[in-house]
Length: 108
Image (cartoon, rainbow, N blue to C red; front, top):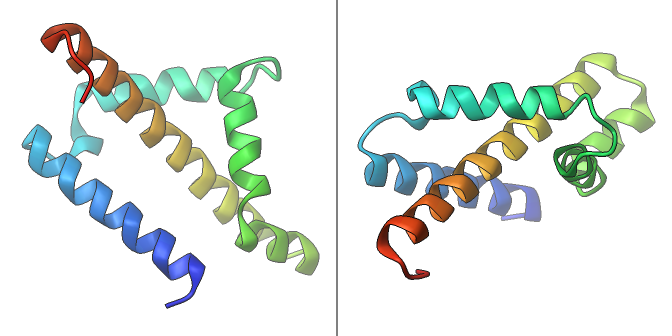
């Protein structure tokens, strides 16, 4: 298993755990859709943390660098979309975790 396959496996496992915890497909939840909208708006601000997180994700993406090198626009667009989705999911889970800390009063 190469690094990319390992990363994808971890992402899938994380999604399955989250869906089991929240009891629904997270991407269908209203909260996830709200976070997606907020993240997409913040991506337009080059001074935002979300913008930096997005470009960090691209910098760490081997697929993105390969796509840039080949000049394949469809691959570039696809890897950028994947990076956006990762940032959205990361923001969603960070916000859920913060909310759980506030509710329970302790860190897990």
